[in-house]
Structure formats: C-alpha cells, structure tokens
Length: 269
Image (cartoon, rainbow, N blue to C red; front, side):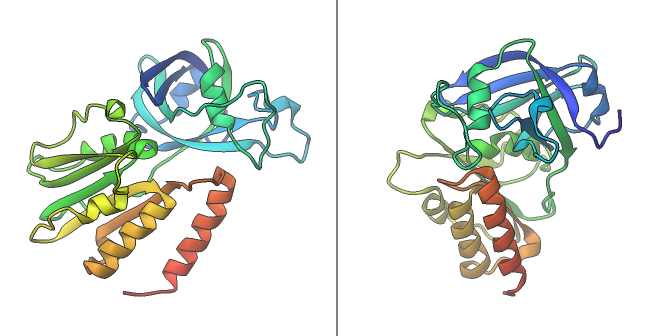
C-alpha cells in the first residue's frame, strides 16, 4: 500500500475522557505506515454520505465526507493511536447530510471495538517560533491535542501564558508537558467574557513574544487582529489557525478559511 493512499484502521476502544470529550483508540496493521513522530499531526477520517465508514457504497464520482482530527498519543510498537473528539448530541435515528454535518460526532457515539474506518494522512501542522522571550498559546477543546504536543516543544525555561477554553471546567485535561514558567489560564464558555476577551485581559509581558493560537474562526480572527494590529506583533512570530466555525460544517469552514487567508495575504501590517 502506498503511503499517500488511505489507511484502514480498526477501533480498539472508545471512551469518554471528560464530560464533553470522547477518545477513540485506533489500531491495525496500517499503523505501521505512519511515521513514528506523527503525534500532533492531523489525519482525515473518511465517511460515506450515509454516515457509515464503508466507502465501497460511494458512487464512482462521489467523494467521501472528510473530517479532520489531530493524532494524540502514537505507539508504533503496539500499533495504536488516539484521537480526541468533542462530544455532540446527535440523534442517531436521523439521516445525515453533507450540508448539516454531524458525521464524526455520530461515529464517535456509536463506534465500537472492531469497527473499521479509512484514514488519510497524516500531515504536519505548521510550526511556531520557539525563539522568543515569552510565549502565548491559546486553544479550545478542538485544538487541545495539538496544544499538548506543542507544549512539549517549548524550551524548559519558557514563560508566558497557556489559555485553554473548555465547555465546563471538568473538561480541562492535564498538561503534563507544560513548562513550570507557563501560567495556565482556563476559560469556560459559560463565562461572560469570550475566549478572545479573556486573552485581552492578560498582562502583556516584556520582550519578544511567540504566539500559537488555534480555535474557532471568529475567536481566532479577533485575537489575530488584537495581537497583530493592536499589539503590533509581526506575523512571522505568530501562528493563527481556525479549527472550526460556529454553525458551519467542515466543508463550509474550508471555503471561509481559504478566503480569509487570501484576504490576509493581500494586506500588510
């Protein structure tokens, strides 16, 4: 099997890790096709239009429904990897549609040991500058796995802020790789302040900053404007990415994200 073809993986376990986070462990012989250092990279889960994972039912010219997720832990020796998915209440009796979405959420609800799914990738996410006087890292639940990997890449002496937005405080997971000089700021979506507003309340530290921010589209744009325009931080020192957009499926988000990147490239600070 060529590495650029989808891999066939098998569900090893499916568990609830926090009130609003599901963790699925995948395995199988095709795990050997993944690079040993792929933790933190993203993969594409593939679904048929009816929500199932049997792609043989697709018409000849029909594309699979794609949903993107980050690899959490990866164990090449034991041929397993984990993927965390934010939990959503989906009525499993109702048909799915490409416009309405819900494919990954439905799968996370019903997947059991032995189920098979096609997976594309992996692909690395863009890096960020590790050479700075301090660091600002912002994530919500969709990017929490990526954040955990990025924290492990910080220098031991790193200082700054790690801001994490969760639905409820019980959704906060351990950040074992966070340097002791980094201050954890937990934001709950139940707060009056939005995630972006929470970031704006932080005391801006002296020296050069390196920014890593991955979250909902509107929140990302607000923080990007604040940091690049209001604070005057060069784009080269920043990584901004939207992992989703409220009220929009992944396919719709891709279109909006592409247009946003094109508009951004037309402007200069």
